[in-house]
Image 1 (cartoon, rainbow, N blue to C red):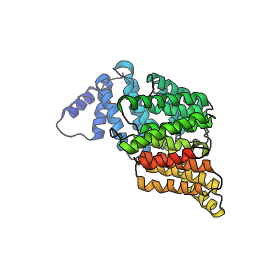
Image 2 (cartoon, rainbow, N blue to C red):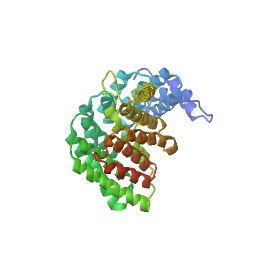
Image 3 (cartoon, one colour):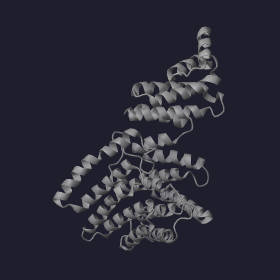
Image 4 (cartoon, rainbow, N blue to C red):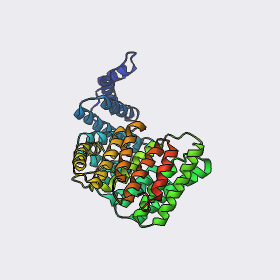
Length: 390
């Protein structure tokens, strides 16, 4: 600590103890002075005030400077306080978001690496997934899931399985996703909680099984999903569960991943399987959504030329983007997208698998929208087709 300006310290104390309402910059100035002489007492207050002001600052560069100052203050706290990493993780994550939003990806990645060193692996896993480093991302998700206990954190199991699958480790991906399905079965059997979660996971598992050549197991998963959907259509839910949309908005874009370009460090893609609103980096999410314009042009050209098979794929990619952009349970605005996909697939000659996929897409959307009877009908038709749902 350098020379202490005792007059400045006194003024700061008087300012904070005064009866008048302080502006945010006055408060930050006082905390800066007092944090030098009483860091345990005032560094946490300074960090909180810096983060709050950065969140209200319209100048991106000034906000980044405040986030960095908050991170520096949090680093000074270190292990000197209980849960000393808490303020650091908060400050670093705020700076990470700002850097990626500003398109400063390499700096953002460095912050993610620091977050990982501080014990928060998930942000680095997201960046690795976006850049196509799927095996490394899977290792980080696996570490995080194992720390969460027997069943792992639900979202992390989806992400872990998704990255294993993207890395070509299909059997491991199936085992991890199977853990999630088993956990949902136990939850539903134990207390009837959130049974509407199970069909979506079962149908996604069926697609993974079919891709691995396990057609009988895939058909069994679909039949189990149909059984749950039938009970929901007949009896309703035992309790209201609001998480269905969050589940669907993870799984539907993930099911479209195989139609998207491969992720590379030079051309990142979304970390499919994670939550689009909370977990995708702002730059990657923005670029992916902006790609809708080119896809719309391509769809128009395909309609004009009558190339229906490729048009169906392009339309599906567009529907995923529109769903992520809206990111709400607005059924009426999105249902026509899925109706159009089914109608288009039915126009394809001799393509039952395309119809099955379109029906399955609509069934899972209807499940998220609580339209259980309609979802059951679509999924039953998809399952009856020779190739089943994908």
